[in-house]
Length: 100
Image 1 (cartoon, helix red, strand yellow):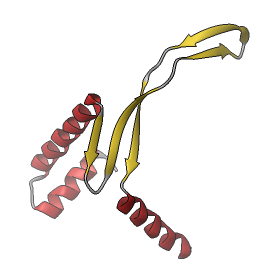
Image 2 (image 1 turned 120 degrees about the horizontal axis):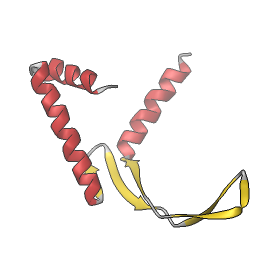
Image 3 (image 1 turned 30 degrees about the horizontal axis):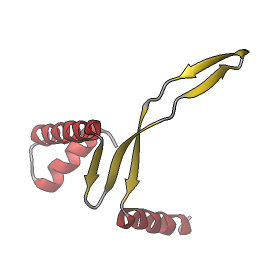
Image 4 (image 1 turned 180 degrees about the vertical axis):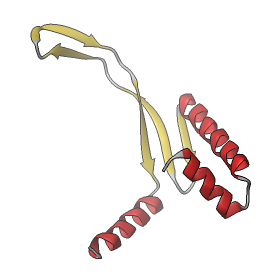
């Protein structure tokens, strides 16, 4: 789902103008990004975003396997859904799959 689709749906369900809904989506996205940058964000009923750092590693170019390259640590974003969200999605997908 793209940003404009989210804004349209928000507009339809909340009675907002599409332009205002788009500003809400943009602001919410920016807030989420800023909180993830700080290290962790928990959205009640949805899940938890967390930044973890990879370990430094030694890599090799497959074309030059004798040369080792140091791969520095880098941040990765992880998402863990709440149990309720995961159960709801799994249950819904199971129903859809059983109808095929």
